[in-house]
Length: 130
Image (cartoon, rainbow, N blue to C red; front, side):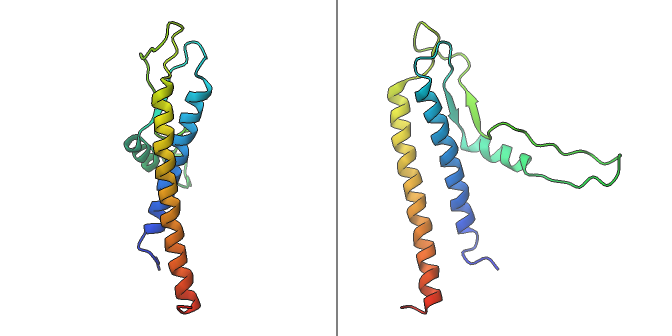
């Protein structure tokens, strides 16, 4: 039985996306002065596609069965290959990264608030409305 018709799992997936995006932004900011570093970003569409392909698991009971393998890379993360902001080849735009970090933090906090609301509702139901 699914208590919230998948709402909690959808919010959980949103939190996973926000966490990956936050990690990627933090890496970009940390490598602001690294020569030839190419800025990375996270695409929800790519992350969803790769997640659907990555989590397929199969039990091989015969040598003739296909082997399903998973990727070790972080889903949805990609580099800007030919982007340069400075003469040393670095592709990090600090203003863009800081704005993206602020936007992602707001998104993450909104998801956490929504999950807290769902869990508080469940707690109220369990306690009988008290």
